Length: 291
Image 1 (cartoon, rainbow, N blue to C red):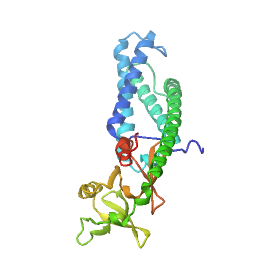
Image 2 (image 1 turned 30 degrees about the vertical axis):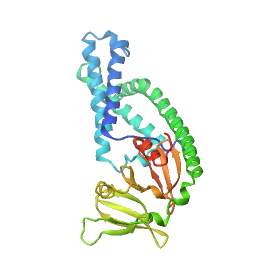
Image 3 (image 1 turned 120 degrees about the vertical axis):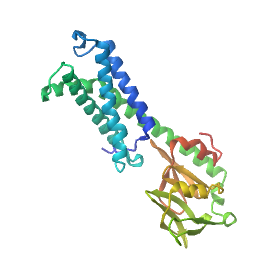
Image 4 (image 1 turned 90 degrees about the vertical axis):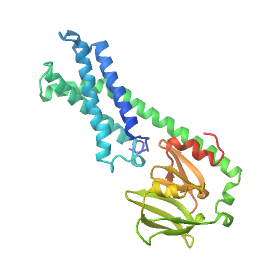
């Protein structure tokens, strides 16, 4: 269980999930059409269109589960909380849904009946095709990414320490006044730039984490992270490293990593700020480190 609860990368953006859905559905169609398994070779109808129908049912079921569900149940499909066991269970849910769709399609074209025994057969066939290669792929991917980001984080930290950059991170010479604006009247937050730690998106609000009398504190303001990032665009030390986080790069003292990517460690807080994988090269550019 300790291993299965390890972080696992999950991209719930609909273009990526749509790509996976199309590829898997096409694989089902080609596999059934070429190899004619599970008695399809004895089918008297047009095998091409029958196989295409199975691929279409696969697409519909996976589209609902992989694209519609993450939009409806956003609280569950959060990458920062995604683990190996969640990925395996989600894969099993996909296989179960595809099996159910295949059973219904077989019933419509006269290849089977709707009962628990037949469904068990379809579930077995679907798991036989998909569960073992997919599970092995998930486990190997997690191990590879875990090692990759752990090793890379060590190299980045050595680069940061060798340059002695951390000695000047919060220098008073870098101070300037900044304003975090609010959509509500008289709720703007005025800060010294070096006191800001990070800003986190929270639906229609943002959480501004900063130091007050050298102690970490938080202020909740009605605004969007996108709007605040635009207001601070002329301050290069503030970087939107994730869809939900904007970080003060002057506060970064080290990196760590797991299968989901890099985590930023900041002076003044114990929270580890995640970095979107597509922004790895940009954020490493702040430290003059090659990805």
